[in-house]
Image (cartoon, rainbow, N blue to C red; front, top):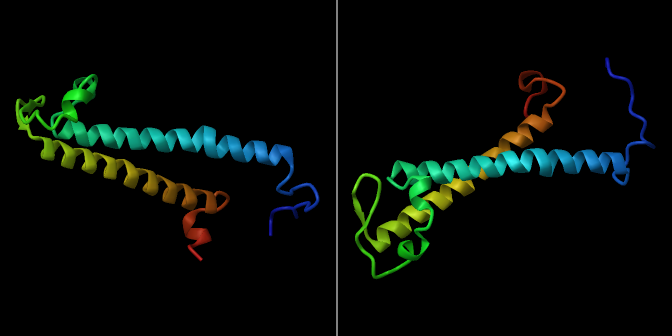
Length: 123
């Protein structure tokens, strides 16, 4: 009741300034933050299991080799091929779930951008 009414003619989806703001907000700001959060989750899971980001650089040929079953991590623990693949799937799942959670929080924050969540509710 305190806001002024919107001018419907000026605010349509084909307005260039509206599209520019929308694209900038979604791809330049939120997309970068979401992808960085996903990459952080990936490297955090890998580092928790002994493969730091520095250790992962240049290890691709050895990582995907089925013949190597004694790859050592930062803690000198040996990893078999199947264990490495399980860890890789776990890290990729962590990346995916982080992106989904970030998108859900983005949805909630944009839905309640003018009022608090308690005032707006989840109708």
